[in-house]
Amino acid sequence: MPVIEQQKALKPFNTFGVPATARKFTEIFHEDDLSQLYVQGAFQEPYLVLGGGSNILFTHDFDGLVIKVSVPGIEARREKEVVYVTAGAGVVWNDLVQFCVKSGFAGIENLSLIPGTVGASPVQNIGAYGVELKDVFESCTAFEIASSAVVRFNKAECRFGYRESIFKNELKGRYIITSVTFRLSTVPSLNTRYGAIEEELKKRQIAVPGIADISRIVSEIRVSKLPDPSTIGNAGSFFKNPVVEKSEADEVLARFPEAVCYPAPGDKVKFAAGWLIEQCGFKGLKCGQTGTWKHQALVLVNYGHATGQEVYSFSEQIIESVYAKFHIRLEREVNIL
Ligand code: EPU
Image (cartoon, rainbow, N blue to C red):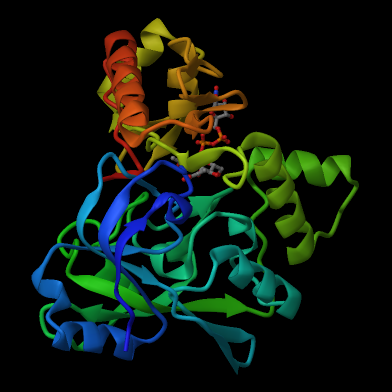
């Protein structure tokens, strides 16, 4: 039976490390715990599902039930060179990556050291260094809040896009992901195209890299560029890289030919939000207890005592400045509560 606590401090449960209180709080370790919450009528009041708390900014207290999903377990099933790895939603993402790297299961090594849990990974289709979750996603199981049934979603049903899925859109708040199955391989087809990975392989004179090399290099790049949430509160990229129509991109490029951008599906153009923000003078800027990270302007940080409101207001300033200069409206990647 899940234990329900009252007036729980959420600071330890969000990597931004901002203060907030949940009126009620519970941690679940099994799908059955969710069925029990359903029977108790827990979903009749506002609820919030929390994984690693690495993609959320609390701007106020939560007047309802916070459900921390801690379903454990990793299982692998091999079919020739294909390995189906199923992990509980509460497994720490990087623990899964390291398990797969050690076992020789290739496919998620480029996603090393991304904070958060397995259950959150399909929600925003996590991605880094040329790989997105959708590239290795097989299916997930999810608890349907309206009916208490456990259902399976295949890849097409999840409607993945850049940092997007059906769970963030049409089905927002209607399902709780309890496990995810990945389609990995014992025969690696490495993705080393990302500039920084190629450079590091050359520097280290690794001609024939393995998945452990890629994982190590990606982890080191992340550590050098991104603040460690255990010492400086943050939630990774605060904004998405904006994707705009080619005509809009041409207008920006006519004024700023050096703008960092890449072709995106549908003849669109994706701009590096970090570059746009840096050009507005925000990189490394400290504003009270918040600011942008000195090595990556796309990451907002908490210097220790920031409130969620403070971080949010600062993000508004950034959005306004970028819009004034480039006529591009940044969208937040982080969920705001
Ligand atoms: N740049 C700047 N100034 C900055 C930051 C970046 O000019 O302050 C420019 C540089 O030219 C750099 C380019 O932007 O080469 C791209 O920067 P980076 O390689 O750091 O990647 P990103 O586009 O800023 C995305 C993801 C990250 C992911 C990296 C690596 C998004 C919103 N972010 O960042 O994901 O780790 O690529 O693949 O797509 C996250 O989602 O939380 C996250 C950290």
